[in-house]
Length: 375
Image 1 (cartoon, rainbow, N blue to C red):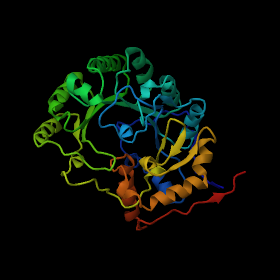
Image 2: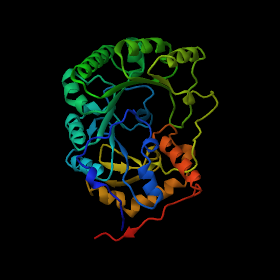
Image 3: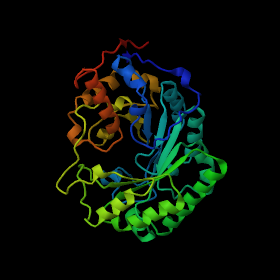
Image 4: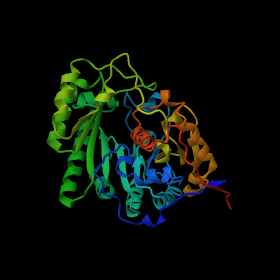
């Protein structure tokens, strides 16, 4: 059986949505899909996070996939044969953004530049996270003209700290800076709209280098820096040295730097979700390097896959009763205490609960959908 989807096929091939937002949720600035969902329609997701690679050229000490031992002995890559048609299907169903990140370094994928260009030509906002070491001048020239934003992991403001946290050679720090300088120069010369941001996971191993990272941001002229705390697989925060707080406060006063203060909790606290039901996966979904579609980070500890693009086209998967039943199970909120509470779905969940409350629908609301038998 299939669930009838209210698609928006006419958007395929149109101009990519113009937004300045880097990461986060999408419903706050795009309420139309939420209205359709509340009315009992089944809109496609706005955003998908795709892991094109399983494996990395760095071994960051705080890396979540490494904590879960997700990397094998050899790097594995998303097959592109079925991913290119997926991009067209995703856009035709109202998709806006494809974000390459997940379990590894996206720039290791040999076809990433072509996939980003293809998605951009379809009218999608293409984005990626990276450690930036492989963003050579040649790669930058192929990738950045078609990219809405890119976020680079820089978990140390000096070469020694960076090499320690990233478990790499110090020369990679110099390579990163050279690549960022080149990318910013090309952007200025060519007039590309791509935004370039940095992110640093702050913890005991690197907090002393915060001033150096701030200075790097100011010297390079990157658009944004995000500083947040480290969390382990159970969602427990790692205490930050008291002397790090004044450094974070000073950093927060610098234009373009965002300190995620909500992540810096007391040492005996764990993250608490700001929502009681989980409907966010209706609007943001995920894909692993094998083409498996899954709801969210819940998949890392409880099976949450609902289809594979190598077996079926995306519209059929999204309309399937299997997907509907999985999302109804997730919506109950039973797993929220185990959730990755800083996942991007969190932002949309808060917006959804506010909408349900404003309409007097109650948190247990489930829209009535139309089912039809597959041909």
